[in-house]
Picture 1 (cartoon, rainbow, N blue to C red):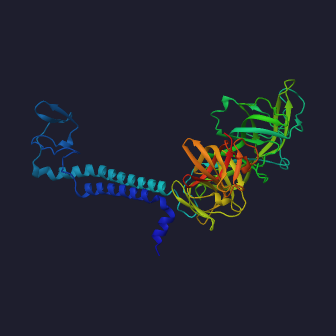
Picture 2 (picture 1 turned 90 degrees about the vertical axis):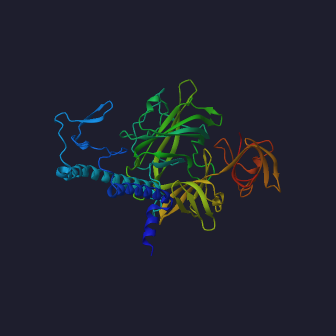
Picture 3 (picture 1 turned 45 degrees about the vertical axis):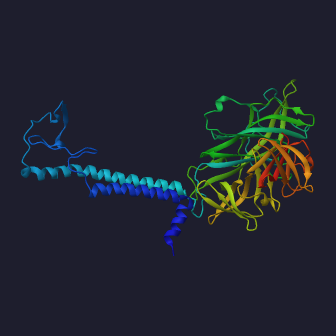
Length: 516
């Protein structure tokens, strides 16, 4: 039974071996230095990097000097300011005593230096071993400890949670009447450009008549806001669920590196608010935002890393109860008043990021080649699959959704650890190969492929929609238009295809977008 090997592997993990060797090497070097000084001391009277000095009769020993004066042509003459130079005692009379005194004076200093060297070596060894292993080889963690990751989604809700405490409602900034509902619009499209997590500064409550839009201010900086800008995401405030029609939340973005603390609000920065039908432009909203208050408990990122280690993952959902608005006087401008609240969804999980390898669809397993470790992952029918390229699309939960995962894909895997294996509840795929250009020779090779003529790089790639043209994901580069079909692809249309090069120049594309 190889108990030592088992324990070492479970504690340090496979990624820590180089660091362990380096730390052991440093320890041996320091140990060698100590042994040399212990068993092979330098000649008495010789300083570091100096030759031994002959001590002339009639002068004090060099070790007793408190100062020295250099005299041209005569070398170094010792000088003691409070003593008269006396002839040195005979060698037979005091030599042994002098050596004993020297040894007694030097021993504490040498001992302290040796202990210091050994302590330094142990510290370096421990630090390097910790950096290399990071806990990743243990049975519970992915090997990277640090701040949390927080995902923010948006969905619809029938009402505020029962027992919600509200703030005193604020009236419109221009009229005193309560805001009205929005029956004139079938859709209100909002383009979100940035989100921020706002640290708690006291009791703050949602407004039952909708949150006021507020102009951005430079004073926000330096207040501990955790902000994240991203490729703009457009969704319908009246129908915020995923455009795939499966009645699930629309994933806006993920915060990474969120520090420990308590967060009471989410600030939503937006522009281009348009009501339809009629393309009614709401109040000019560039550099505006509204706040969403947590209900049922704030988002709390704990100070201490969980004993299991890893990067903690929290899910937050913005729920839209309704939408009210004001018309600003005679200007015709419509002022946005969304009735919204935020909540923390589920229990904290873990997130692991890296490159997919050893993908086994039959066994529903793969490995994530993370920064410091290889993490084993298992998934199942309940796993949600997203595609990511500056924005998220999905989730895909139908049987066969995992076929979009192949070796070399960049993945974010979210789940819980069970016996050292990450059980995935969500997998976000970033495809390693893309091509953007004009479609040509559309639906060749028995209606299975088309050509993308790209300027950068300057090549022609044959795109095969996967798993086939009926089931590949087609959409428009401008969200929130619902998913398209293969019929949207035509000669001369600008497209972006994402997937894997099977054999260049054949690109197996799982996600194809139409538009510039």
